[in-house]
Image 1 (cartoon, rainbow, N blue to C red):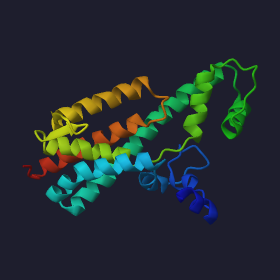
Image 2 (image 1 turned 45 degrees about the vertical axis):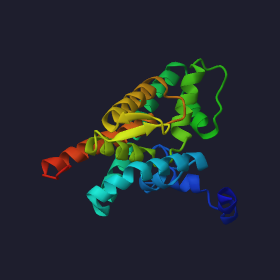
Image 3 (image 1 turned 30 degrees about the vertical axis):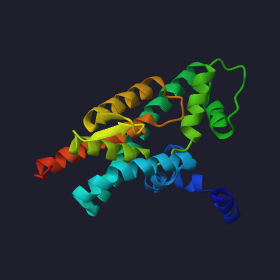
Length: 222
């Protein structure tokens, strides 16, 4: 039903509000914020909102609404910043591979605009696809901020038990450490799986430093 409404309104919501690579013609500065409120499907939004409710409720009650919203937005922006930084490094890395494989300026422009290239060029297909996808694929979702919330829960209530699959108890601090390690592993070794793992890590990283900053300013914890 949501897609039909978008089409009837004549608005491409993904193009306008998801986050594109800054070099892309589709990039607009407001996407740094709006992409956090976009999701790919019902499963995506359900699990993000479930995690936000599960971990965010306790934090909002503890911090107050204003501090919680500040934390949520900063970690969301931090997630986008790290994601784009990694994309920038990857983009230039794959661009150099394509140039070494014979791609000229016109070939790169053709690839990015149409997704086509001359079969006479010798660059690896994986590098070509990664270069194209970084430039053209939008990022959307609240996952970066949600991972920031998860990190904050683990730091604020480290010994609170979380029940994996509603059955297996694990302390929040260990849950956060394991989840963070998995995201780092997947970010390094699974970078073509379509999930912005470094955005998740960015939310956790910025959340960590923000909480440390607040603690230095004598924000009291339980």
